[in-house]
Image 1 (spheres, rainbow over the protein chains, first blue to last red):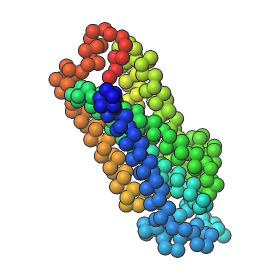
Image 2 (image 1 turned 60 degrees about the vertical axis):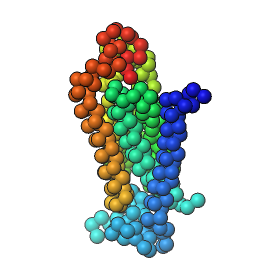
Image 3 (image 1 turned 120 degrees about the vertical axis):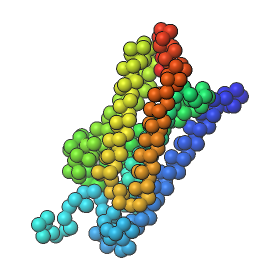
Image 4 (image 1 turned 60 degrees about the horizontal axis):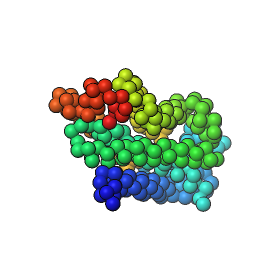
Length: 77
Length: 202
């Protein structure tokens, strides 16, 4: 009872609150990222609605894809 | 499960790790100030440790989902071996190097009671543990250089918020530690002066 109402109890409660907040934040971030990029529609990795950043769905691409030229094109084309 | 879920999770976990490690860094800066009440110090120290543990867990989730995601093409070697990634090797190496050093800093934190038993060792421990500030900065840099969401408004706001949080906590710590009254009432300083060997760090 003493620990529950003392500094250790408050520390435990604050730590649990932090864990829950971080879990909620992580879920929110993942959801926002997924929703902002939509679902690929044609197998190119590009969305039909873009990602709202002005790059027309480039955010849907993986890092590797972002640094690669589109299929069928060379870096110089 | 959506084909992109691993990729989304990797990015969300990376952002969440940055947020959590920012909380850990800020709490670390404020947790040992003598001017705060002892009860408050206990709470802040617990939050520092919990946030640091969560941050490392989120880094593990960030790295493991990137490795498991076949579309990222980064792979185990690219994620774990600095400069082995084909994608932005310097930026990814900054992240992997930061993660390794964070593990060392965290291990030092866990071993604080043993390593900092003497005043000289305590000073060395504090200097080594202070590397966490630098590692937080390199984690921010990794996110800015390698993150694919850095162009999104809410991500920009998140990063700015993290930077402001840590800068404010660091500034408060510097200002209070520069106050002679703060130093005079520092319990650790008193224990050091008294030559007490155990738990010389607050």
